[in-house]
Image 1 (cartoon, helix red, strand yellow):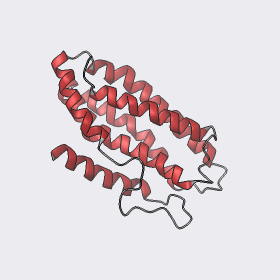
Image 2: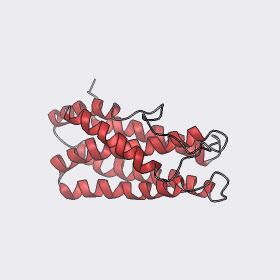
Image 3: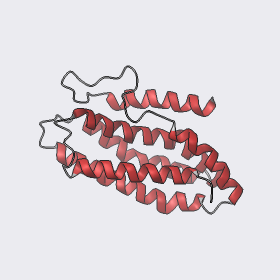
Length: 183
């Protein structure tokens, strides 16, 4: 049995997030009735971006080169932009379903491109390098909370995410992930 690699871990995140975002976008999960669910969606996508920034992208740069690493980072930009649109979209806005659908589609595209590109490139490395990538994976799994709000972060009084939430989440999760990496 082969050891878990960073790409295995990130593929697992992709599957979980695609499923969650798809259910929200299709209206199977009602974020208006349960705004904490929307917070979880935002949290998961932000956490995934932080995981990639702190754990995956440095490994890509080290093993595949700076150009490939820049491609990974630029792949996250559309997701970040859509999250910022989502955090200022009112619960009652007719735009909410469109924004959720765009976020789900952008995430699916992110996962598809990354798995077909950089993950395949990483998986061509020597077996000992894949084992080394597997040592990074446990840190990735612990890089941020997924079931509760990071300490001190609150939703707006209405329970709906407020402007600036993405930046606050990112700052908290980034500090935590870097501490774990350097720890």
